[in-house]
Structures are given as structure tokens and as C-alpha cells.
Length: 388
Image (cartoon, rainbow, N blue to C red; front, side, top):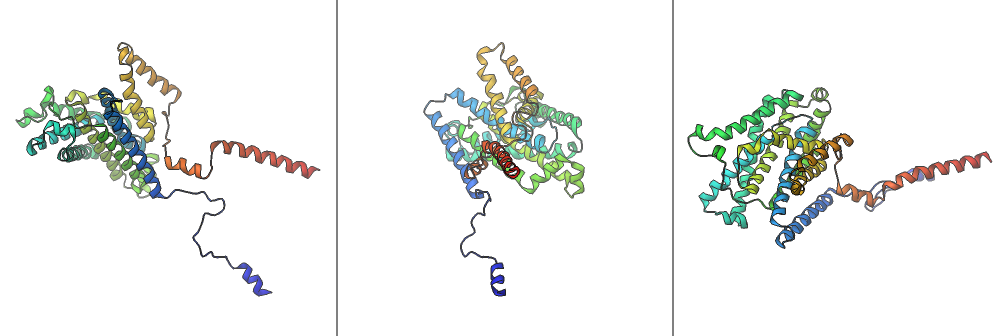
């Protein structure tokens, strides 16, 4: 009798693989998540390129789309310092200008050195593509160095003081770009005349490939322990420092990464418009990028991308109403800030794998609304039976 009781108490061990327990939600493996996102990005890039090659999208429209991609990178990168770190820098246009001039000068000089002509950059020969990729990395590194120089002293401040000092640094960068030729004694940026003759190396495929890579790298960083440390500083800097987080290091890291991607966006911007002038990177450019982040939602990557898309396309779509288009632009911003002060998406971030998992588990929003009602009805029936 005792042996039977002991046998009943022994756990049952299955020789097969462990399946999902009852009530346990099924989840996609991490490899499957990355594969789904990679396939989706590849489809978007291929379809867009085919539409441009087929003439469905005109040259003007493709140029606008390239600028949309540039502003998405700018908004998403500024979101690191503003949305995730919780600071208020106003010097993003300065980092963009450093990356734009650095990339453009690198591409032009290397093109002359290696005998790569303007047509090679337009058609995208292998050597030209390698020069452009190296130029984008070089421009990003130049902006990152500027971010280190500015970030170490500036990030000791907070709030309005940080905004003022970063704005001042951005203006210093603009003035340096304007007058550096006379100091160096040779032509580098060409000052107020503008840097011309930049090859048109930016394309839909290159720009949105960089957009996908930027979003992936930022998302991966924010999901790592470095990203969690940055979010902890945003939530409570004193508590984060008391917990052992090196706040100076992580604030500088977020600032430098943000500056690096702003430099990459500047390099793409240079290849898109073909001419650079210091006046393009003034105070209002920084405000414009900040508005995109705030409008989309602080800390929301998808919100930054959507607002950058809307605020880039809207002025172009209203170009026929040249007298009133900026009024409509301002009214749209005011209405959004009145009715959605937290931004279009708040802090929400879209996840395709999360939606697929909810479909796999049949976890639909309408089921959550009906289940409490069904439980309440069942409870009333039980209580009625008990009274009988």
C-alpha cells in the first residue's frame, strides 16, 4: 500500500521534448522575429526600387522620399537623447552639418583620387558604393567626435541650461563651417559660397537601407543593459547613480550615438541635395527635428518615424497653396499638441512579432472585453442556483 502511494507521488517525466504547458502563451523564437522583420524590410526596399525604376514614382517624388528617410534617421537618433535619456539638446543640426560636410568632402576627394566620376556614383558601381559607405561612416565618426567634445561638458547641465549650451555649440559649428577656409588657408567647405559638385549618390535603396539599419541598431542598443541604464537615468538619475550606474558615461554614450546617426543622416542629405551651405543647418533645423520627436511621442521610435514622414511630406503636398501652406502646417501642429499632448503614439512602439504572437495565442482585444462579461454572467447564475 505504501509503495503505491509513493509511486503516485513520483513526478511523471516525459521522454519527449517539452511542449507548452496548459495556459502558457506561445512565443516566437528570437531568430524568427529577426527573420520576419528582415523579410519585411527587404520586400519594402525591392517594391520601392521597382516602382521607381518602372516610372510609377517620379524623380521628384523619389527625392521627397529620400528626404523622408533622412529625417526619419534624424528624428529617431534625436529620440535617443530626448525620449530615452530625457534630456533636451538643441544641437542636432550641428552634428548633421559635421556629418554632411565630412561625408561630402570624403566622397569628392576619394572619387578624384581613385578616378571615380559623377556618373559612377549615380549608377552605383561597386567602387563608388564602397566610397559612399566609407564616407557615411566617416561623416558619422566626425559627428560622434563632435558629440564627445560637446557632450562631456554640456551633459553636466540639465533642462533649459542644456538646451542653451547645445544650441550655442551648434551655432559655433555653423560659424566654423562658414569661416574655416580663411583660417586654414585652403579651400575646404567654401564658406558662404557653398560646397558644390557633390555626387548624387543618395538613392531610395541606400537611404532606406540606412533607415532600417539605424532603427535596428538603436532598438538593439535600447534592449541591452546599456539601454536599460539609459532608461534608468531618465526615470530617476539619483536612484540610478545610487544603484551603481555610471551616469556620466551613459549620458555621454547616448549623446555620442545620437550624434553619430545624425552625421550619417547629414551624409545622405548631402548626396540628396547636391549643394551644402552653412545656412542650411541653422537654429530652425534643430527645432524642426525636435518638433518631429515631440509630435511623434517621446520615446516612441515608430512615432518619430511617422511624424518625420508627415512633417516632410505635408509642406510638399501643400506646395500648390504656397501662400497658405505654412499656416496649415502650423495649425496641424497646434491641433495635435492640443488633442494629443503626449504625441501621436505617446511611448508606444510597434512590434510585428508581438502582433503575430497575439494571433498565435488568439489574444484579441475584443476577447478581453467579452470575457469579463461572460464571467460576470456565470457568477450570477451560480449565485442564483445557490439561493434556490
